[in-house]
Image (cartoon, rainbow, N blue to C red):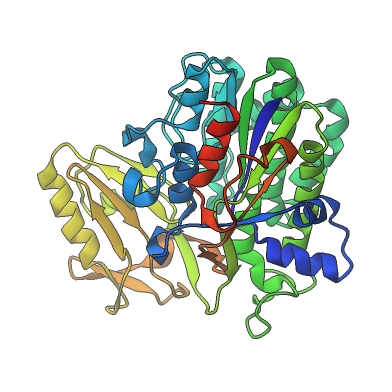
Length: 429
């Protein structure tokens, strides 16, 4: 039997149980919960509870202290072997769609579409390249609600070629309704990738395939307070989202339908894993992102080679030499908002690169400023609002193994890296 690894990023199954108990019909989640759903664990330190750390652990079978991949997109610098090439080297066909922080080192992939934040090659086909570029542009410009004409054409082309025509009305509904209900943009992307994955596993028939779904993580981070099972004392303001909406329940219903396909596919065994999970946050914290990273760095007079936006508030700046990087590091660390709090609380110097996170946690208004060369600069001109933090990471994750994988599955509450061994054991590698 062939095997599917479904990467259902950060979903909290305890919350799904509560929705089921309150009368919501979530048959796929209920089936997994009833049939020996395993709990997994991740790192103990909160700063290491990041999906771009946990998924490489699953892909390599190594804990963070062993693979040392700390940032999103950094697996390209890691020499450890992943599931993908291990399985291919054993003589099997491999496909992958958007696996987080994974690098394409396959010799002849059935298909390979990287995640939107990792600079690695696709499988080389025209559709995969066009789709990868479009998804990367759309995801990284999400906070600006910007999608280029080229990306629109690429997404339409891939949809017409790779999606069952009977599924187009549903995709159209989520795409159009996301204008008024922005959480549906993430659901649209996951539904699109799901339909593409269904087509590719039928056409290419790989022995092992994985797909990464991120809408649930995004929605929990941004809208957990709207769930009836969240913190009753913290609610999102009505200018952010109406209190009548519950994107968490909507997301679970969409995923329930997606998972039904995998759970009932007779040609594949399946592992469904979350990596880690989220719980409702216990404070109010605002997330912002630079509108134009190059424009901001130019305003500061920084000499750099290029800047690469990563997920949400993160970006990577590359320099010609270590001296320019040090100068930039000093400048960024000195930027105080309203003369009190750092704008960039994380500046990770890697020699000729800086990994930077915009950490300022408070609402940015018309009066919010930073000082440059003795002059007050209005911060609102350079940032765009991303979200109010609603969910935070926790070590607990979940994993479901279909019947023929039970003899390979790790013990309950094992580290997520043990999922790797279950997969290699299944393929007798």
